[in-house]
Image 1 (cartoon, rainbow, N blue to C red):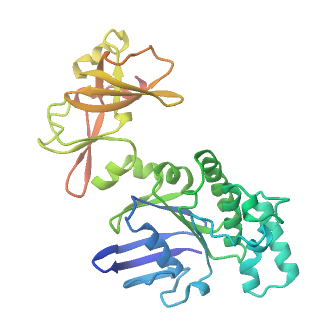
Image 2: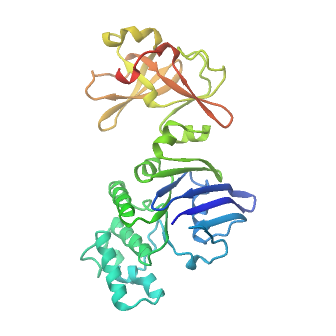
Image 3: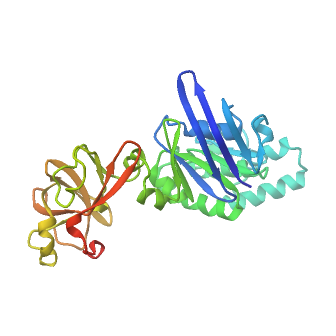
Length: 355
């Protein structure tokens, strides 16, 4: 079963929540709608669910246009960020709710609920009430309740937003494994890049009601198609003018550039292994050092601008105020609605990955 949106437009007064949105998510895929707050992500999800009506365009589920089919008849499961569990009902009763609406038999309900209790890892907790569960456990109940009626499609709106960071990481792994096991086509909304990359098979970048780019996480990260995607994905330095950097003389003057940490290398002035590369390096001064677990994040002032790079803990000690040689391997140069990758011409023939 697949879901598709074709030419979807939606306005709320003068606000354009969706502008000619078209995409398709194939059977069994887990896709993320990723973008900043207010970009239109949740509106898109709600139109698929039938909770909002688009102004124009088609919502297609498994080849059938469902524009005028009520939400309750679309066969779609929906998980909200605040769990939306019934507080006066036990875990069992919450999960069974949709099945009772469908007027399923008692044995069928019990078998299905207990199957899901096991699937979501809540064995022995089916008699508890929501207030007796942790945030992560409550969200697992919400997942199970959405899956109980065997929906064609599962939609999740910021499903981890109300959960603390440690549990959120655990649930990401669990959700990805659960979706793969069940094989249900799923879409989830998030503004968290790390979450989207960790969980999704494919990502849709949404900005001001537009679909900027859709693709696999690595593809989007390495080959951003628009200036917004290049700036939004990853941790980058955005430079208003990239003029004057060694090896980038061919870049048109006055162009804005994006330099990611992995595009930058900083080494000590006495590093004999890279002495031949010093002519291609800029002079930089370390202005900040942050511990990132397995690496150090260095912030350096180079030609009056701030760049970051990551440094292995196995390398020699560095200090704030220390002067370094800074190599910029490549940069994204922004044009109107496009990005171009420029490589440092002074590093031609050098295997920078081996440095």
